[in-house]
Image 1 (cartoon, each protein chain N blue to C red):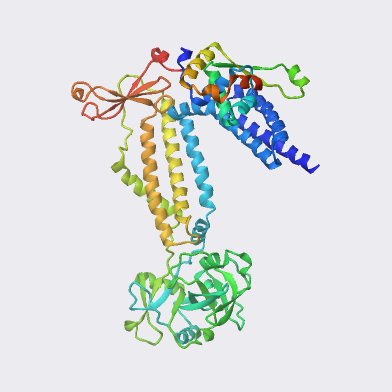
Image 2 (cartoon, one colour; image 1 turned 60 degrees about the vertical axis):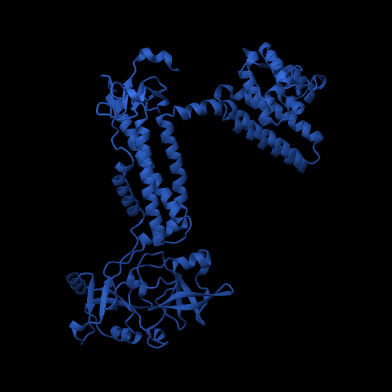
Length: 496
Length: 106
């Protein structure tokens, strides 16, 4: 019973394979070839049933027979008409090929976790008016200058220039993970940090505001992906950080905010908790009030901050705006495209630059179609360059990173430049009448004829509409490729 | 003209097997030991070059033997002269499939 069921299923699958192979065969021969294959399959099954030493061996022979049908299906159609299509490829073929490439690139790019992380980085941006308060002597790297005690004093004082402040301090700690221990950059922050930044948590299962006695941890997106395989049930798990037990209460989104240290985890603690290890300095992150914003706008991007009661001319703190480093994939791609367009004249002649020997002009409809074809080709090439560069940049990283952005930008530039070059080059070799690629390049003339006649390459349209003359040596009277339109009397030379 | 056609060894082997008489695809695979992916494309090309011709057997015969109808292949006159040329080119063809054996299979 079981054996006959397997036979029935395998026979159905083999007939399905033959039907699939038949789809490759030209329509007029399809039914006959399928009939022949099915007849032959009967013989193969009959023979293998009698002679094969095991059912598996029999199925293997039958499968090989069915795969042979594909080779058979390709033998005439594949070798003849495919070659013709490639040589005389039409505008539609070209657009379809590009559309297929786009259909491959776009889903790949959208399914990469790094691309999703970069989209998150764009979505979860630090709200405007947030500044990082640091040592006034900071040059390239921010220098921590505020102790937890100072922060507690600031909290207890009414602020005129800020409407919300949070504390931030980072250090390297040992974190116990999966049986091992890793040293990571950990940020100790006040619980309201994410509220001040205006960045919501990705997985806020436990309200972070309600601080229990045990400190709580928020994972960075990078750590969540790397160490926990982006497990959404990670909330509530317990971690040991620097000998202390922490409960995970959320996951921060992939973000491009330029906070010092690039922490793997944020430990939320009360000011008292933050001060337990002495008065190691940190930073204050503040959101400017209306008055503070006015003062900031008047000062520029580096505002000196003096503690209340101190001398404003001797301020030892300064505030700088927290900016989002990410420009977003769209902005980068647009800039890369802009640069590629600027560089294009260096690699190819931008003008389609062809002249016409005869008085014949294609109809305006044909000319519009030609320009539409070029526009569609360029649009598709740009889209492919965008998705291909995203796939390349984020194929090897699962989170947002500035280096991936650089790779995306560089790849976007190169792909756009090469793509645009190809689009223009291809357009110059397409018959203005039927948009088919001209073919059969033939050398015409001798180099010595350059000044009295011309020498170069002649190609013709397989539809018999045009000849394309490309000079070997551009001269003042023959500088650009020249189309020669053929009338219907030439038709007998070309196929139907 | 047909006699000038240069056949590959495989195509010549298939042509030689067909020469035994009316044969069909599976039969050829058995005689030559070649897989379907080689035999069928070769048959298509030989038929396209008019070296062989094919003919479906009558449904009544197939029904009587409780099997699907077969498509038989036969050599054309051009095929025969091409095969003569191929035999000179590949003298071991006869040894690979002796004519008697081929006739038995057919």
